Image 1: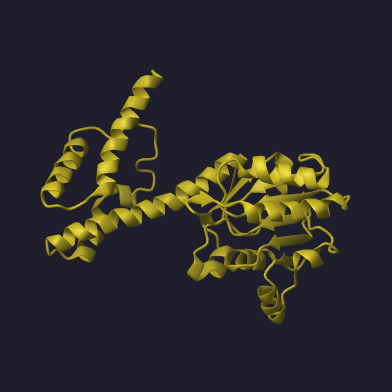
Image 2: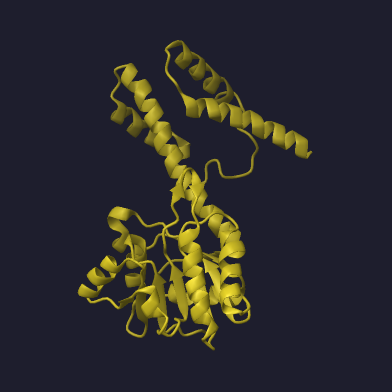
Length: 293
């Protein structure tokens, strides 16, 4: 098994710092790289080993290098500039190194980013070949901002998207003592899983906020109603509900009840955009299924 002696974390914000601290053990050195000079000073004052990208040019590349830089949305579009810069910097350092190492994208990135941007950028900057001179993985994080340090040390799920088995083996070695089963998939599967994860949370919050307005219009105790839904609704207490490919929702209740409540809400001048979109999405999936046959 590969012995991981050094781990680097590029991007020492909330997620990067928490992740890096969780990777440390008695036999493994962890250092950080961050372009924010103020953050570098602050973390050095805390006793962490951290470098600016320029300083890191003189530091030996780590066995495993986690990219934890921001991936903001600007004007409604995904901004990959931080990911690209981190990849370029790693590629330049890899160019003067003789050892095999693994680059791990931990930032949330759109499907295809790791393969089409990160790998190609590193190969161009290093003049080396993925799968031969270096490995690549995509390892999504599920940390909550308010409890990132605790979550990083006690993950409830570990997913590794791997370019190849050798790459995945290196990252699995980092997580071997975390006490969780490690799932291994392709790069693209790991990338899209993280977005499905985040968007489910966003949709659930928006869904209940829509019905918060409905309940308030009726003078109902919203919190009590929602807690009852959490107890009665199989989609809340059965984690596998809805994830099997059983086709669009159908049967006696769901089609009629979705239409009935939407019609009622329209008469009450209540906007249920998610419910409306759900009905349209279900109809669209029916069409999609019929066209596949």
